[in-house]
Image (tube, rainbow, N blue to C red):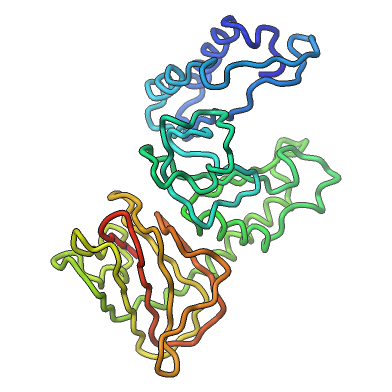
Length: 329
């Protein structure tokens, strides 16, 4: 946007639309289309070094652009500060909020929305489903520089980003800076592969797979508490309509060492949990696990890490929710 001579005029919008149509029709199926929110400012507009400002909300006619994407690439997700398919989380560090709602207020947000700090947690009272997407580069910046080969994010760095994105009800979008040979650099590639192996290893042992389950409330029928341990996302435990706080207790055949808990709501029915806490049984009483994170929202996936415990009983106290509980895992 900061190099075209006609930027800021209607003529540029005509050019923009034609360019977008080309991208949506000449290159096969697209998974995601970004409307970045970078709008004008200082630049070289056809060689004119100057500053140009536009009405960020209205200049591009975003409803028209979104309709174009939906028509030409109906399976593509639309990303922007305001969704509509998924949203920026307000930083380029790859970190979602500990509280992370998948909602935005559609009347407020748009690409280039200035209150980026709100996007980190979403809007609890939002009416538009826009899950968070955490974008971050494996290198210090978005492009390749050989002097940064020793600054590539390590396996531990990437693992931490996973827990702060996927583990907080968001997705992780990791940028690879293509080198001067047109390839992902070997250091970047190796770290990414080892990162994947590390996450698979850390999350490989489902300690609760054989647990017996007891809940303080259950809708019954096909919504029994046992569904949280069956490994099937499509089955879930649900409370009765008016019950927005309940506990679920998981008992193991023998004591196990545990340092994290993965929770999932049944997202096809929305995001509901507002607050929860995790407890374990030891020396004849229930104790709270020691975690450094707020235990507020759950969403599609929440991975809570805490100081290692040894126990044969663990329970989750769902303290508040927007509706009856629907917990898949």
